Length: 110
Image 1 (cartoon, rainbow, N blue to C red):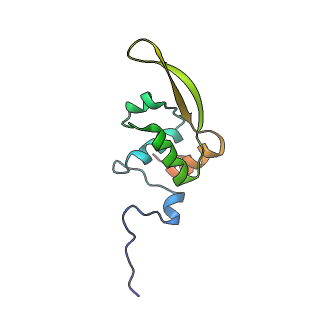
Image 2: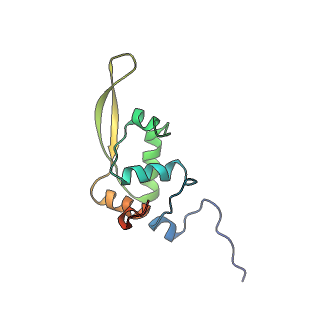
Image 3: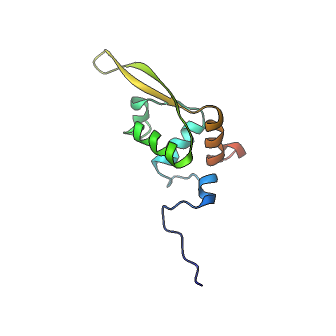
């Protein structure tokens, strides 16, 4: 029987456990790496790193990797000088450890 190539973009079991991150990895992997490094983002701060729809990114990462993002409502100053309520997201506990494992940060990678 002939070996078939794995379709591009499909996840094998090993892909979900260890994720090679490089410049071609895309937004989801880039954001996962940032969160695995302990960074926190809300919808406006995520704009500065190229994520223009953070709630969707959070949802996708939770579904793909079985991690949970902590969150709280905060008010940030907007361009009109008033404050806008937004959700601040970060990883902690087992989800942070799992993200560090997926990105290789637990082995000193990235």
